[in-house]
Length: 78
Image (cartoon, helix red, strand yellow):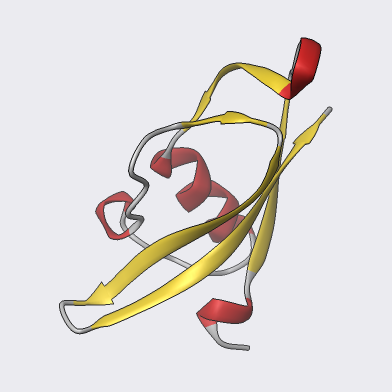
């Protein structure tokens, strides 16, 4: 399976309107990917800003200066 076909779910606590308590960062995404057997450095996950909403996000991952893939990240309520 290629990295662009990889999807991870991160469970969070959320309040009204899907706004989560805290934020999901590139470190959280790297940990979720590691649980799926994909080992990356957190600097490879190019998250413009921390995720603060429940939903599905396409997060760019820089594998090499010329190679980028996108990982689907599902932020779901616990």
